[in-house]
Length: 565
Image (cartoon, rainbow, N blue to C red; front, top):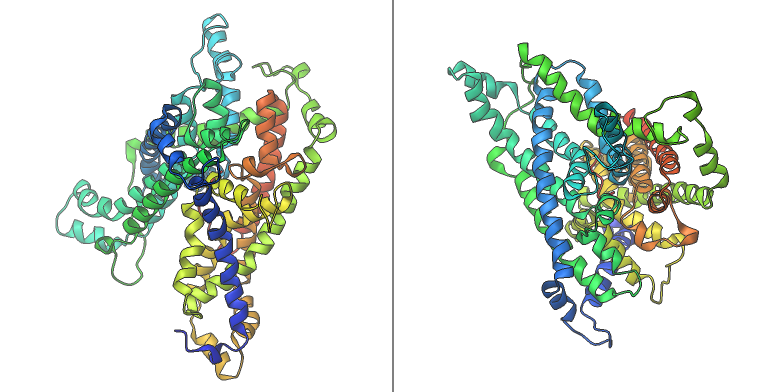
């Protein structure tokens, strides 16, 4: 319903406007500080020197170009893996499809930095389990190795392994929405199956494939954790790790802010391209509901298809998880499964001897709970304002609510660092700055969940209440909230999960007293503690799967794409 004046809104307008002001503050303040610092010289005056250095200094230009190269390769391989797997799961008679979907979901919710650690355990040149097996099998000396994870190829492999689910989800959903009638009409007109696929199926699924590929590109370009664990030991820098190093001694805040700006601009442009692709009218399906398409019988290709699907989930989930479990329960990371090498020493060490574990676990849970709780109500109100056009600036609120998707987490971390290390709100060194960061990053999750829920509720329900004299807040509380209860619970669960896996912003904003599990894993990797890393990582995964399991059981609990990990 369109906005009809202040009188009609009664006292609801201050509450709705406050939610909009909170949203604007969370987004505009750090981005304003980011721009200000990028244009400020060492003497405090305005300057473009930081951007000039960004273009002319090879030490700044090289990481950006490497990030673009890696992102392009990751998006290509993600599409190459995900498109056929999505078709097999959505359109063929492949056995165990539900199991493959669940394992792809497990890969989807696995933080890439934890996947990078797992593949370190598997493919480090000297200690990697796969390289150990290779040397044992062929009787080779320790200097020989088959895999080297500390390379550009290794980084591309790891990022593609944990990025392809973005493409898979979009393509599988797109294929499942294609009405049966379109392909049947093509067959009736005499087209063979390959021609129907070429002229009907592929054009309808192509926007989802390209959009998913763009998402994969953005995820790879903006990721910090995997490059920090794999590329930095190899002497390589991506733009995200370079931004992080600019905060080390001696700090170069102006250059760090300037380096974050092109990352932000590239992300905004590619997200805009993705929205245009998904919204193209030329590929819209017109008509009512229809049954799903007939499944393609694989026949003699069923065996190779099963091998391909199993290989994908084995590389992305089964092997890394097994590596983490073996590392957590082994005295020495070797191929030996002898009882003497099995131990719970790593578990005891992490939870009773390692300094900071208890605090990091408490901080992680506290931030997850508070972010999920504090983020659910404002996003509910904002989604209501946008869905019902309850304020004249509801379109602007919709833009702000989704804009964190266009802000890489490390860029937001840079902006928050500058914004909250200066008066009047000095939050650096407290959990408050991490709370603000997590709340801002995860806003789109709550907003998108509630937007989908409001689209399923007709406005006539509210009109009936308004006729009986109820105000907007009363309607939201007594009528809509009970109907949206499952969406509220699932949103809370999803924001919690996304918060506890956040690393890119946390790595810039944490202090000794505000360390979280993701930062603890990064620190343990720096000191070379694979057993302890595995224990902490498995703890995070258990928390994630427990909460995702709750969300999955609820109706309308669609899993949105996390912004970063």
